[in-house]
Image (cartoon, rainbow, N blue to C red):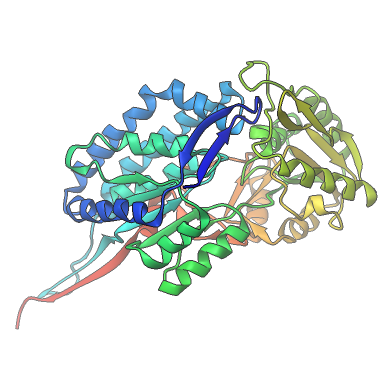
Length: 460
C-alpha cells in the first residue's frame, strides 16, 4: 500500500507518515457518516450548536501542539501559527451564534387557511477537500455550517498538512453517539475522484488550484452535483492619491508578504496613483527590507520557507520575465536556501505593466509588483483585467471614491483601507476563475442546505 510522507520544509526531517486509504476503507467511513447523519439532522438545532461548540474546545486545549504541527508541516513561523487558531475559533463561534436565526424556517402568514414555509434541509454527507496554506481557517469555513445545518462531513486535508485533518477528526470524536460525525481520509487523487463519482456523497467543497477545480467539476458533473469551489486569485489593490500612505504601505506589504505570500487573497499586484507612486515605493522598500528569513521556530523570523520547492522556480521565472519587459527589482527577487528550506526573498518590483506574467499569473509567493496609474478609472480597468476575481481593495480617505471603486470592481469582496481578511459575517465568494459558491455568513449555511417548500391547504 502506498504511503504519504510529510517532511518539515525547513529541516527536511520526516514529520509523519501515513498509509493511503483504499476506496473500500474510505467507503466504510462514508457509511458511518451516512448512519450518523440520519440521527444528527433529527437532533434539535440547539443541541447541535452545543455539541459543535463542545468539540471546538479541543482546539484551545491543544493550541500549542496544533501550532507546532502547522509550523513543521508547512513552514510558517511558529509565533504566527497560534493566531490562526484564534481566528478559526472567532469564525466558528460567530457561525454558531447566527445558526438558529439563519436555519429557522421562513414562514408566510399572509394567506388564511394555508400553512406555507421554506425549510433549510441538510444535504447529507459533505465532502470537504481542504488546502494547506491556512489549514484551520479554510477548513472551518465549510465544516461548521455543514455540521450545524445537520450534515456529516468527510474531510480530505491537503497532503502537505494531513496532521491537521487528524486534529479535526479527534475534536469531533468525543461526542458520544455522534462520534462518527466527521471523518478524515488520507487518499490519492484517483480515490478522491472515485468517491465523488460512486459513493454516497451529497456535496463537494474544494479549495485549491484552478486545474484542481476543473478536475472536481469533471467528477461532480457525472452526478449533476454543483460543487463549491474556492480557487485562489490574483488580488489587486489601488492606492488613491489621498490615501494615508504610511498606513496603506504597511497594510499592503503585510497583505503581500504574510505567510510567505501563500494566501489566496494576499495582495499580488498594486496600482498606485502617479502623484504618490515614488513615495509609495520608497516606503514599501524600507519596510520590505526588514523581513527576516530563517528558522520558523525562531521568534525573529518573519518569512518562513515555502511549503513546496516548485513554487520558487515559478516565481523566479516571473521575476526574470518582468525584468525582460523593463521592470525594476528594488528588493529581493531571488531564491535562498537555508538549512534544507527553500525561501523566496521578500520582493518589490517597480515599473510593471500588464505584459508581464507577474501582473497576470498567480504566484503564491512574497512578491509585490507595483504599477503607476493616472486615476481611479485606469486603476479599475487594470484591476478587472484578470481571469480571477476573489478580492480587491482601495486605499483612500474618501468613501465616495471607495464606493465608485466597489461598484465597478469585479471581485467577490471589495475592501476599503484593508485587505487579506475574512469577515465571518460576510460571504466568502469569488467570480471568474476564483470559483463559485459561498462560505461564511448566513450564505455559507445556504450553500450546504437545500430549500424545501411546505404548502399545506388546511381548509376545504
